[in-house]
Length: 199
Image (tube, rainbow, N blue to C red; front, side, top):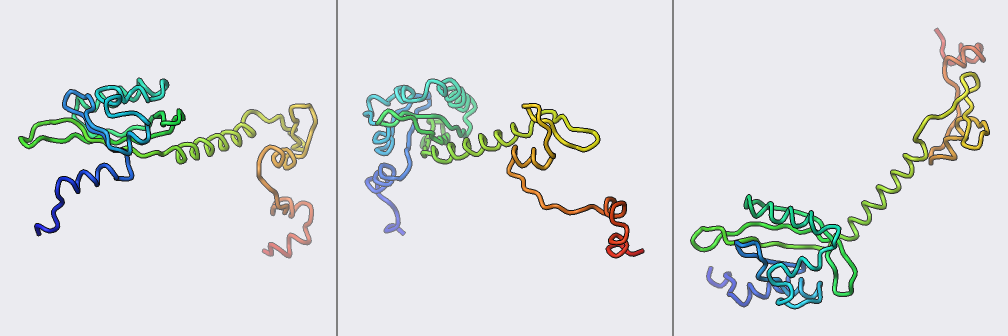
């Protein structure tokens, strides 16, 4: 059993070399530790990130939301999750998924938070691309269509009248296969209708 227990140096290696960014804060909500992955990502020193220094790398548009979630969780001592943009060592902002969990000291008292972060930029950008594509499709078909009550042609924004299937094909990815409904078949082709729908 003793052989399976990890020593301090082994634990330190696991935390420092883990493929995720790890941080820790004290009960005062100020950060007092960042692993090597975090420091390599930001390109900053432990001293620069210490306390609230890490927040200097948060995108200005995400800062207030990030701070509200972070401090709100501290007040309730709850697990929190959030996404925000963090400046990488090359100056490019990357989307980060951050999860913080409260931890206890040896006496069972609240000691602060331990958090882990992963870069989720590709996932966020893929979602944004999908949403833009969906919105573009919706915008094509949004609004009132001026349609003729008799022939069912649709007037486009240039004033031309087109068959409804032509209009839809030009404003969406829909394709048509033509057929004839039973009502029209009965009226237009009564002999064929009787063969297809015998009483």
